[in-house]
Length: 226
Image (cartoon, rainbow, N blue to C red; front, side):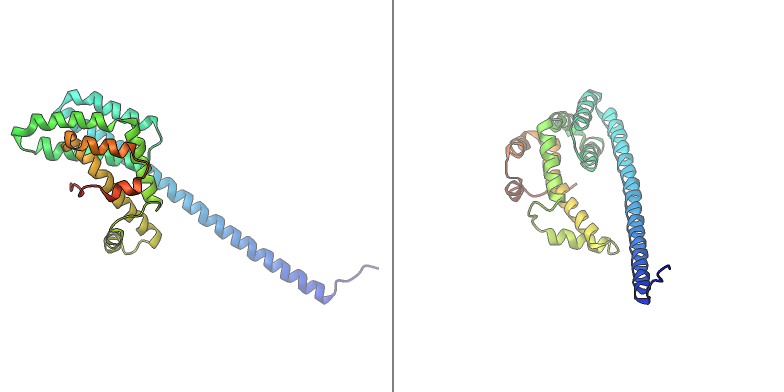
């Protein structure tokens, strides 16, 4: 004779089934969220590479326009950045600063300083292609974004991002605020090497040699505005 499951056992089985169903739905929801995150990351990554490719093209066009002798230096810089692991947004930022310098100081700058500014461009790019310097820039950039360096005036940066993009979630706002700080720190060095390489060479060497980036950024000179 076959045993008939008791009401208690049937009830327990039903509860377990419902629990399993909920877990499956929960897992499906989690998996769906993960897929969406991955898809969004792919889109963002593609956009970053597109921005980087555009930066290379625009920088080359500008260098070619003002000083063909600087093209090999630009090539060396790009090859140096490609030969070591550097955040793609940082690479784009470095090229952006070169383009900005050319536009502001050479194309639309004072004509009597044109040759001097072109010479500064050459010297600056020679410094910027330094592998140790690029690695140190990436280290600073990465550590700032990871929140591993105490940032001065960070609240002001965060408020600025919140005012400009109030709909972003807090995590993204913090990320963008940290990135803005990192760009300001690195901009002091990059812009300085392009505009006045003789003056900023000692600071650049100190930056490369420092073992305490947190302490180093405390004593950076006032940010150079674009």
